[in-house]
Image (cartoon, rainbow over all chains, first blue to last red; front, top):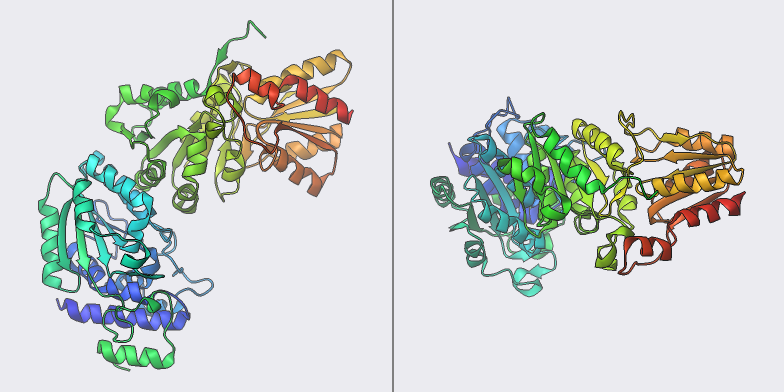
Length: 269
Length: 311
């Protein structure tokens, strides 16, 4: 499977849907696009025909503002028609500004308020352990999100209960709404923090599929600890004028910008 | 009522968890380092494999409870009412409420009768905060017998539920078999001159106040409003129409709780004078529960006084 090609489609979907919505979060959606591609198209045991499949793997998208990336991946994976992406954020649409589990098949948790998805995924992983289910739980966190106190409550409990069926991925793009993490509120060192909380920690390039898949293999091989994959990414990845630019955290491209973005990602106009 | 048996509703809760532990193999109990106080330790002793102490981390307590509930568990997650409704409010709103997760927020040590711990631990805001959340069932049982009956129904119900429980032993006023029903106000005593609508541990005070008023020739209706949401507006409108005056009695702020719910209902449907007995807009302090109830105006005497002001 050509994961780069799928990620390209997902990036174009993100640009088009956020453009159609007139608002949304392209920066953090583009940074996490390769990670969601890897999760939905290879790593996770899921079935778009049977979204509630017993023993399935679950993804809790704790950085819910990057919903356009999750929606695009679900649509491209066959959970719902790709055309529906153009209804993003519109009245009556299933595709709410932040994910709602009641409205979209494949969405395991309604997120948006940062930090909560991680705590919820701890509960899901506990339940799977109790029931002897094989399903694994994946949680995607933003790096700015690590500033939430609940993140560290959840991390402490995941370590305490040795939730080896839980894999957290930090989309470390280094930026948040007000600017650089380092200027707003330092979150470094992320790896040492998670290690201290009892995690198996892996650092990767979040845009390199070989490294992403190797990290997932590493996580599955770890049987006594939860894993935290710290994925170094670029906000706005794939679009030159959005890359590493905090200004594109929560802004929709205009017509010209959309054309330029799609061209740069490598799609047809 | 010196000879009346007294039991704290948190104790009733601990006993119900054990009672239902076999009937509900998917019942999971969680706590935040207060299992001795909340009485969840009773369940933990019997089913340690279904008990999770999340440590002093109330936000994660309710977030993780959501994850377990969305995985098919019935979750009773406990801490003090102050920290459940206050500290974890937004998690309860966005994770539990928004997903209709099957979590029972069984919050103990509510109100002024926490006593000696003082203002930091005495919450008067929880009913107001919880009844604002769409779809949240809000229960405030008054005694051991009705508390157990309501908890059994709450655990059988598939959806989020806030149950307000107390620290102090309170008189047992109900007898078995107890026919209380979630969402249905229970008229404990008929009357035609005035209605006392009480909730939680103030029901016993309302009954005592009614007795005193009856001795003075006043016909008093007493309603146990054990369910704050869904609110039994019908019973309130009926009381307004038939008795013309209402006193609300709660161990909670007069802002946002039972008193407010009753005022909202009568003002929209059948305006009648209402007096609210409860915590005025102020913080509490340390003291014995009975001393505090007296100082902050939540006793039988305060109810009688409010009633007389309307009569």
